[in-house]
Image (cartoon, rainbow, N blue to C red; front, side, top):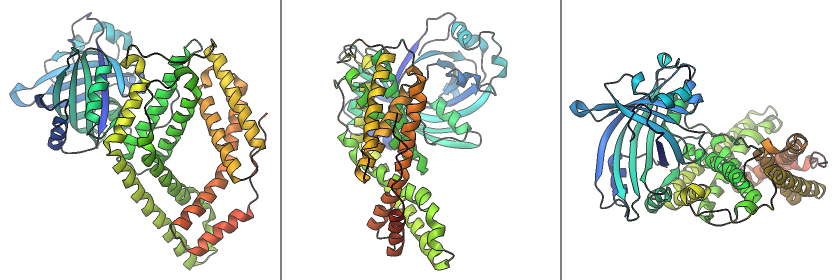
Length: 508
């Protein structure tokens, strides 16, 4: 690790972070030790106690910086290190951060141990240090293997198992960190791929510091929301493509990580939204990136199917059926009991399917597929020779974005005019989603009439057809679950009594 001496050059920590299923430290270490890449390598295990600091208004977090004190080991051999890390907002399990670390006397921050150049970027007037206070603590056991490869690259593999504590709450830590000590970034992915062949893992974009802040704000394992990256008109199309796709993929994997512990319906909903956003953007940017190195996603199909089943159950229970309860019950206590028993049945089925989804997340093939997608998205960093396989005809980013949005809008206009039955309306709804996701992704470089008028039309189309489809999905679902026949008949009557909803007007 870099030492914290004044005026040292900026040190970069290049790291690949992977989430593991919670488990016993000893058994997980033994499982990892049996992988071919680690089998004949010696492991070192030690305890780490970390205290993270920030100002009361979290000025460090706002600048994507983390400052911690770390106690390594226990007893007479324990020693303390002070570490400052800086980074850009991260949308990938692969990160590259500035890091300055050096010894300190004990569990107290030392201003003199801060690299002056790095600290001046965060605090130019040097006023924050007196306001720093402990925000959260992490305690974990770290098991480390050092992998020296024939190509002279070196990768440190660290298994961290423990807990993060803050604001009278705590949450688990169970992750694998692969840090590049020497050689190309591709070495990280090659070592990770060997591990992923037999160990279930998920790409993890959230650092321990971010997890600590989430715990302090009571948002640990909450649904991860979309956060489209800021685009500039001068950006190259390949850079834009990867920035957009990385954010969408992090949106997806972040919710898969949360799903391991969270039963909140929004987690599943956001995972499905994220995957649709990602696949839509993949189609949008295919002329730019091509297919070179693109992994197959068939291993994800069973997981995605179960997520769809869970979402149908959640929507029926929480959105579609509650609006119709009073009409069905009609002041009948017996009908009320029948209706409420059905909702309880839906909740039970939803929990059963969530557990199935979690079992899929324990399949190494699923994690390896996600890992290879991460590698493809970070190909310029991971493989120096990787280049986009297609160009966009010399168009600027703004010109290309307008061209693609106009094409999608024209297709949506035609689909709206042809939406005369359930299948064509469903197709129009899917196209409305694609149009919406594309405009959201390219918002910063598109003209106002597209980001406002066309976007609003796409959202209205999606919503107007959505309620009709949700009711039909609920009827299909309840029929499959052999729900009470009178409830199914009631819902079919409601559907038949509704006029086909207007698609919200023809886009102009």
